[in-house]
Length: 242
Ligand SMILES: Cc1cc2nc3c(=O)[nH]c(=O)nc-3n(C[C@H](O)[C@H](O)[C@H](O)COP(=O)(O)OP(=O)(O)OC[C@H]3O[C@@H](n4cnc5c(N)ncnc54)[C@H](O)[C@@H]3O)c2cc1C
Image 1 (cartoon, rainbow, N blue to C red):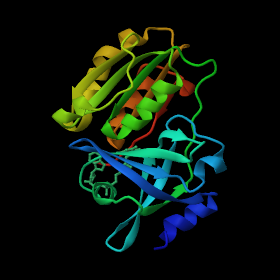
Image 2 (cartoon, rainbow, N blue to C red):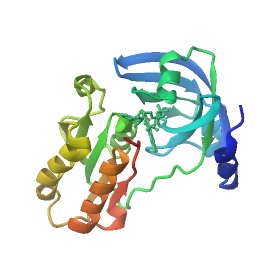
Image 3 (cartoon, protein in one colour):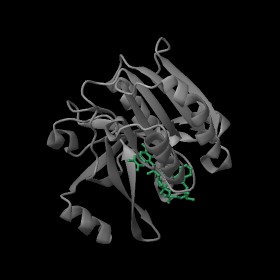
Image 4 (cartoon, protein in one colour):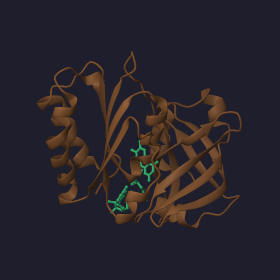
């Protein structure tokens, strides 16, 4: 199937199209599934990957194209392979992940992804996200292995506490926060604990946020306006609409 008007717009913005082929699937928890793919030449075309790198995958919903963003997991340019990890809920992307078989293909468009860490690299990371952001969070921890990291991880379900973080217990601290009040619980927890950890000097800190769109907007405004963090010290992107 074609990609509709969204596909046309992405072409105008120099979107590049690829076709991935599924080579394996793995149920990580009841609500989290990994799908491994070959990349149809993507990593060769881009010369590698950057932390939190994502692609637009084209699913089908009611006979129409349905485009959703997913993060590359462990991209390997030598073999042209990576994983895609799906936090499972209702939705066409999740239905695809639940049912896809080895050998099936999916179209992808690369457009819009980018990532620049401050230079010099931050020595303190503050990360706020949920299961949809786990692949990006792990790529961030891998990218700055020496940084001290504090992670506030919103869990919608008890089994989200078992999700595989790439933690180095010596300098990573993970706080689980049960989702409540449509993200309000997470916002309260961050407001109660982040300011003291952050301190007055922000020059070595970097705050990365990816939650539902409303929670992300609230946290981004808090970080910039109330805590006074400069633009290059905050990266906030809403990952899903409640
Ligand atoms: C840059 C970027 C990278 C992303 N990377 C990943 C990734 O690696 N893994 C991943 O799982 N997701 C990731 N997401 C989020 C993913 O794109 C969305 O969750 C998307 O809406 C899923 O599409 P869908 O077709 O399954 O559901 P939709 O048709 O979009 O939504 C169906 C229903 O599910 C609800 N819903 C959608 N997403 C979620 C969610 N995450 N949690 C709870 N309820 C939800 C909606 O409110 C709606 O009621 C990323 C998003 C962005 C912007």
